[in-house]
Image (cartoon, rainbow, N blue to C red; front, side, top):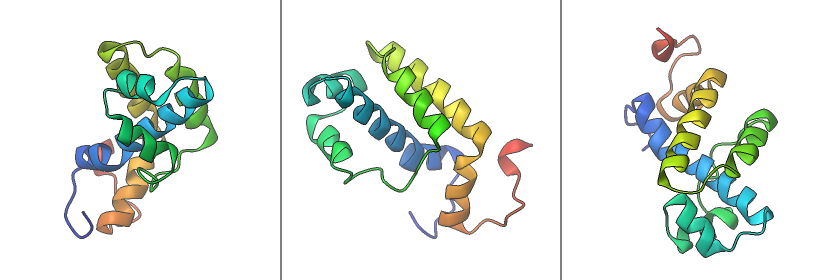
Length: 120
């Protein structure tokens, strides 16, 4: 994806959402869930969960403590696809307010420091 003009939504799909899933998987594992149960709750495969837990996938984005704590709190709410979607959207809103997406855009497509495209 480097050197390709990415839209903010693509940054979310390629980088942010996988990183959220990784954090959710880590939280659920600490809560005692088995990988197959985590995969079912997150709507993904057991191998994907294994990669998340082993830090082999979605490692380019690091959230601050505030976002990680909120993801940990939100992980407890996930029961099905509907609650997963609600949690992801809520976490994405918080991430967008903290401008994490901007940092990835700057790194991946060399945007200038004063870019404000997403906040117009």
